[in-house]
Image (tube, rainbow, N blue to C red; front, top):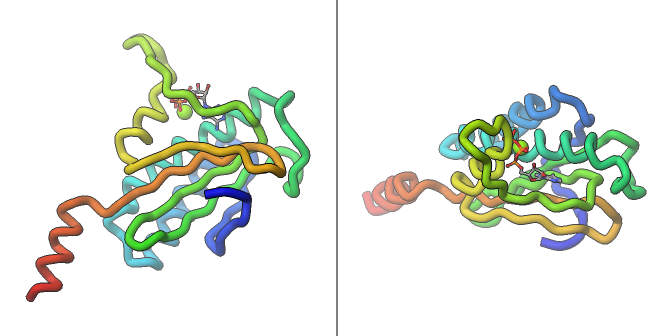
Length: 155
Ligand SMILES: Nc1ncnc2c1ncn2[C@@H]1O[C@H](COP(=O)(O)OP(=O)(O)OP(=O)(O)O)[C@@H](O)[C@H]1O
Ligand SMILES: [Mg+2]
């Protein structure tokens, strides 16, 4: 996963609180098109967290913003398939990395990436040469879905 070549299911978003909503709608549409309803709920949860983080990062780290092909105050997301696995990516202009926090019970934040960590098969980030950073995660079919597929194949 290197570079910033985007896929056909690319969506550019504003740095705005409604962007996680549009990202969820986009993810639903694409997964429905792929007939991957098994992953819609999980993918929507995860994309919400990643896009919320991108919006926050962009807002709170303006000093890190570097020149990009996008206008100011824009982020993007896309998704693509690698076999049965869905890859979700979110780009923002901040170079600072995502960090798994260790929130106290009273803390109101610091849990989003734990959700991603729990639901995704894998996740990480990289800094493409043109600027900013891409946070990605992969979602595999649940074992029960895989089993169903196997059972159906053997019928
Ligand atoms: N895209 C990002 N760019 C820069 N830093 C990030 C990004 N995503 C996450 N982080 C860093 O990782 C930390 C943990 O992210 P996480 O989503 O777990 O918590 P949060 O966004 O602070 O709160 P919550 O998601 O619970 O509302 C953030 O506080 C932030 O410092
Ligand atoms: Mg968060």
